[in-house]
Amino acid sequence: NAGVTQTPKFQVLKTGQSMTLQCAQDMNHNSMYWYRQDPGMGLRLIYYSASEGTTDKGEVPNGYNVSRLNKREFSLRLESAAPSQTSVYFCASSESAGIAGEQFFGPGTRLTVL
Amino acid sequence: AQSVTQLDSQVPVFEEAPVELRCNYSSSVSVYLFWYVQYPNQGLQLLLKYLSGSTLVKGINGFEAEFNKSQTSFHLRKPSVHISDTAEYFCALSGSARQLTFGSGTQLTVLP
Image 1 (tube, rainbow over the protein chains, first blue to last red):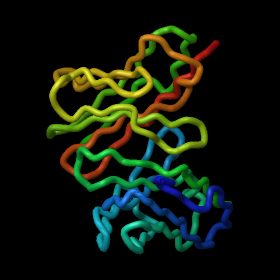
Image 2 (cartoon, helix red, strand yellow):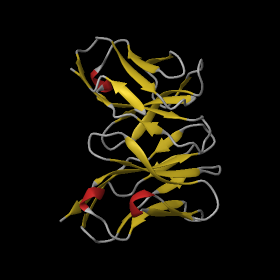
Image 3 (cartoon, each protein chain N blue to C red):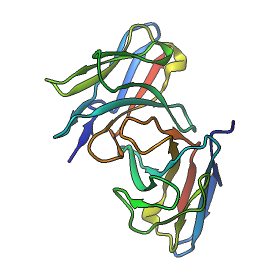
């Protein structure tokens, strides 16, 4: 099992460019999440999908869109990148969105916006 | 609203010494508490979790944590650390919302 995979691992964008971060999990989990990690701020939830076909905003959704393509895949799109979106992005999945569920994390995507 | 405070951003400690990483939380409802570890250039992985029952929880790699409801704390401890424990540690809670709220992290550096 690969667990949670993310592509790309690194990306540099210019202000105003768009891109999509891809995430896939092979654990048959129902719920998936996108976080951003910034120094001294821990992880903050951007969007999550409790189950296939549903998505909800997290703490910091502005400037992002998501698509739950199927049960395995959950993508994050930046329509017009800004320097404030320079961060490390993590995708995670869990068996369900129940509050006691362990989340499994991917290796992250390091994004720099110039 | 719920929040997690990790009181120390950096904790240096010598190899084979004990360590405690502190975590306090705030929530108006009952919570579940977690500790995750992040090794350099990797994603997070679960160390241990408190759901209910015994307030002393044991996790992987010899770590344990104690849930203290009256002090709203969930401190992480290890009696003897190794160089390989060098990593960033995150405390997190899950309350009424179906989301995890993370603390800002504590960088543990084990010195030879």
